[in-house]
Image 1 (cartoon, rainbow, N blue to C red):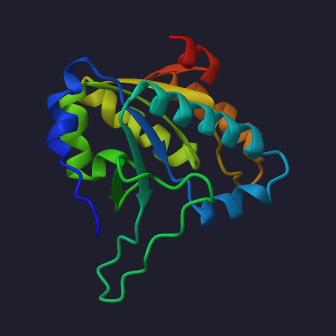
Image 2 (image 1 turned 180 degrees about the vertical axis):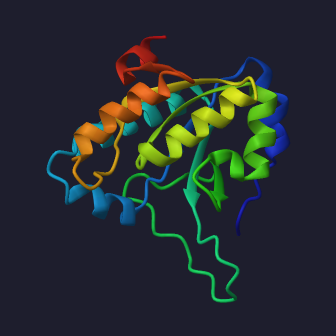
Length: 186
């Protein structure tokens, strides 16, 4: 028997709450990043797990997001499987989005509008974390980017590490950027 999570519980208790948003922790993203030797993928995933454990220990809500196929085709591709060990629990929120920003999912936007602030980390930071931070800034929401619990993909003529440095600098224009350790202590 499956349990239905009432999102109103999150929204009504959100006024004094923080939210941890974990993005794109799927096998397909892991496979792309693991090929780029400059990626600090293992360290990033360790920090993701630390943030998730911390949030669960404190009872902070966690939202997992993933991008879905945005095509209009009848045979919509199902999203990639979660990375083993990073699967959402029944008490977690899961948001699928057709575009890079988490705000592309209206329910995510509604939940965050009630909370007003969140921490974000995960894979494909150069797309998802950056787009979400920009959208959050435009909505007056406060974002904390966990830079060492995130990883970016390499681009032509730039390895993953270089892309992540540029991504972090760009996100600093729209969000606070901290290490996972600093976030855990805050």
